Image (cartoon, rainbow, N blue to C red; front, side):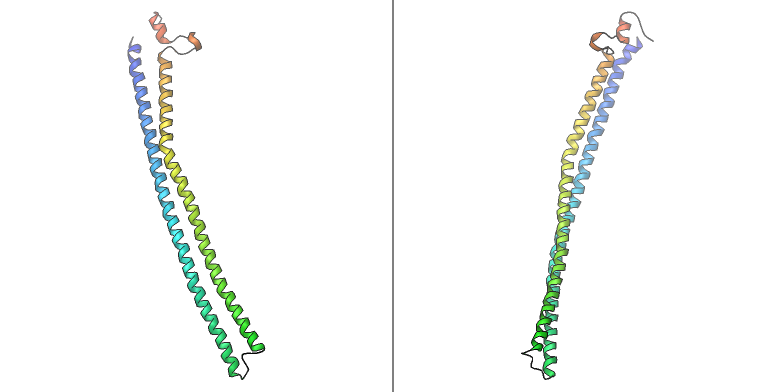
Amino acid sequence: MAFLAAAPVLAGLGMAGAGISAIGTIAGGIANRNAANYQAAIANNNKIIAIQNAARAEQAGNVQAEATSRKGAAQVAAIKVGQAASGVNVNTGSPVDVQAGQRETNQLDTETVLNNNMLHAYGYRTQATNFEAEENLDKAKADAAVPAAALSATGSLLSNASSTGFKWNGGGGGGGGGSSGVDNYNSGNPIY
């Protein structure tokens, strides 16, 4: 008889334990959401930094290219002055070709500086795109964390309720052919 009196208490304790477990699952989902939102915020900050670095690389490239261009112009002028000091006509023949060659070299140097800095800026923009994708993924994880935990907790509660009902309502065989200790006790055949 003590077994029957304890059965509802045990079932209630089992359901309480399932409820506590469900609350823990939902709390874990909330913690996962908060962690994912934090990671999304970090990715967003990294994206902003990468965009700023790209802009700085472009600005630095423009400054370096201008300095390279000025240095090249000074080299052409020095060549022309040196040619003139030698008594050579600086406006005809090979002296003009030498000056043109130096201008072309200077133009190439300037464009190389610009190109290198544009590549750096492109690398930073690529990083920004990657950080944005990471941010979006983390936001999606955050959005799904609590509903997934709630679904898991609900499934666990339903499974526990079903299992508890099966145990205490004579489950055992399919379709009513089985018998339980409760049925046997009620029929005068206790199972101990």
